[in-house]
Image (tube, rainbow, N blue to C red):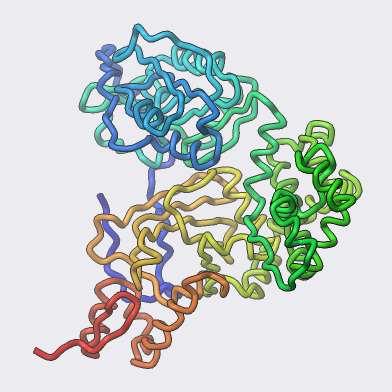
Length: 522
């Protein structure tokens, strides 16, 4: 595995940590080799691809985090291998069964709310059989099908013997490495449905088109905390428990519910007269400012969803779930006006000047000459144009697991997802991997730093987060200490782990957590 070369630079001047020499398409190269080197059909041992995991597979874990798999759903694992996911889900009291042609061939293939076709299609060398497996899994799906496969960025071409559209590994197994868009187009074509990217190489296919739209819209809806109570109000105190569901709805959607949207409506109306009067009591107690902010930002979230939905063919108004239809009417009066504003937002995300101006004007994130770096927790606080810019990459790749710093390039239309696993705990966390998404070619590139003895590290962590982050002051205090000791005088020398250690040793300093201390003399 290739390590990163030692670099004596800070992050502001560090070379782009994105992988630029990754093979573009392993499948195409394998096919080219196969044409030049015809060979007899090998024996494929598919069962040897099954592994025993210590935890859930990535697709199932994402579906849990996204709220698709719950204790109220039943799951069927199509091609379950040794059944590790089944055991882990059952341990979580989630109904789950599975079938595998090698390990559980006698199990019945039964319909389920959620069907997982996890890393199955990439180990089937016959294209027709691969297609049949996808269709059979879809036929069992009642709500959501999860399809995952390995991507070209994982390919190790020197270990593969070309075969059909993939290659044979040294273990005698077959692997087909897809490109992200190639996998999506194949799924959509075979099933006649529009899939949703959940992560690199992972897609959700929804039976219900409205459930799909609700899921897509929720991805861009930020999480809010309920405004704090400022005044003592007799009616509020008397009916606080009854008002909690209304407060929750207002916090989530930024508008009053219609009667059918809130089960507690009748009880609230009997006690307080109407939902509008109940909302008035809540506003008087908690104040108007934060509720106005929630309303404005919820409107922006909806606009972002509508902008990005254009990539897949924006749904007609009647195809939206009823709750989204109500949101549109409240926030924009008409769907045509909402779509026009959404188009303006999407086009601004493709305007390099607009993106650069937004990067320079935002109060959130660390600005360098080439990019704006922001922690995942502060994404929702970026200007709309930057949220749309990042959203274009996320609409293509889904959630990049482990990535917590997002790099918005100012000089090129591309977004990078950087992984710093110890961001909160380590005072200067090291970069372990980066994934680059070019917004013109969409040929994703990946680079790992896990084996590097001298990876890039972060400084001034408070710059990446919002000022209301619970660790902002802690990070800021360390930065002030380091500045006072002159550790940032030569930023070009401290951008890597080794360079930073040299700077600390030269000043007889050490770090104890997020505290800078004098190193004891020997």
